[in-house]
Length: 134
Image 1 (cartoon, one colour):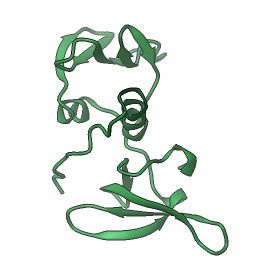
Image 2 (image 1 turned 45 degrees about the vertical axis):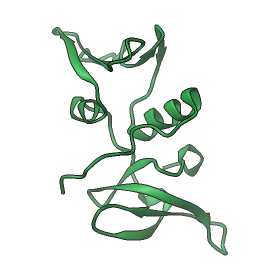
Image 3 (image 1 turned 90 degrees about the vertical axis):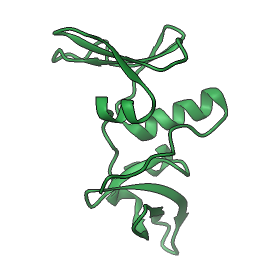
């Protein structure tokens, strides 16, 4: 992963487990590393060894979204705030897939992108309270 896309508290995958980033740093040879933790362990790993987490309906529901619409082409999820929606496009072109905020489409496919957008737009950390089912 590109370290420039990461922030503290982003959720990422490492060795098939979900972790939260708690620190981002460089070593003496200027390589980037991340300190990551979950309920089981805390470790340091090379930033390029961690993977993004794909946004799915299950993740959206974990973040407080509810499935409100379904067709052969699209599934829509909405939060209690009526201005926040997420569409999963079932067509091969994925034209309408992404986050909708106040009617504006924002293309994001991964959980860390989703978290970063909310952090920038609303000035607070979002979607970090998750119990991991390991």
